[in-house]
Image (tube, rainbow, N blue to C red):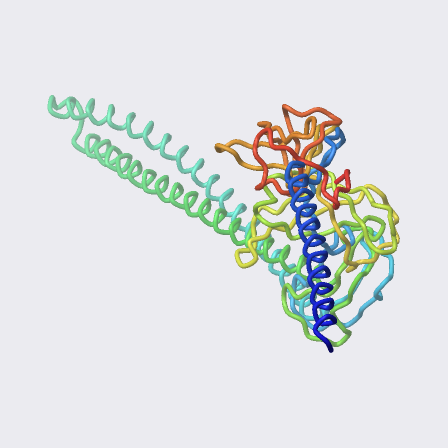
Length: 428
């Protein structure tokens, strides 16, 4: 290549490089200008519109469906089951016989107890008769004593009279000795009658004690008879309510112990749900609290129910308390043992202002939000109400229709310019 051609190529390269540099400089200026324009827009934010609506604090739990009034029927005495008269699923009436326990020994006990009662009654009759005789003897003895005392008084008077006459030689000695002898006999008769009265009184006392002992023995015999009667009655296991046999735990010929469950019965037309509730949530619940029950077969429909009972004790390991929920509808298609979702409505509010929890931030130990006004974020103090962790009731400062920021809160300041981000969804 000659010198002239090389020079032309060099000039061409210089022109190309210059043009490229000029294009790059212009693009760089445009980029800086664009960045400057973007910075002037402020902080990108997502917003939501403040609304008024009904609001609830709901605790969600799962629970188990049970037949209402379900209870176990247990044996009150031990022994061999000789007969079972019902099957699982059978409907019973109150008083229907469920099973029978072998009772021959108890029948013998009842007969013995009955004989003991009759014997004790006879002993009591004899004791009462003995007392009656003793009381009659006492009456006779007291009458005889009175007579002896009267006789003694008469002979004492005669003795004192004859004694004076004798000392005056007015009567013979024989006459005085005769009076003296009769006086001594009268005195002796009084002592004899006093002893008879004392003996009769003792006999009455003993008779009364015998009656008391006989009554106690009769009472004991009657109690033993009643216990034997009840034990014999307990060999017949009966249904205490009109119900359905849910489970059967025993078999004919089985030897059972006292308190051993034999059947489980329930009222299938009424259902209840048992839920284990945490101690923190329990403080907001009470009997009558509304509950919404759902399960797959219901699809989008909820069954209304309410809390009917809250256990007075808690499980120390799980730190939960059993809550019983009763349905307001009867004859449901749910079965005993089914699992359901239970929404416990702890608090309910009508027509209140609610905002997302993520729109709230803390400033100077107070709750605030950023109110979006004319392209700026205005810091606004609010008064919070109840919250469910996702939404919160606001008691002041905001009105329906207000726009508030729900993103980039840490990048915002009071009166900060903002613009809607590309992720703005307008409604949270």
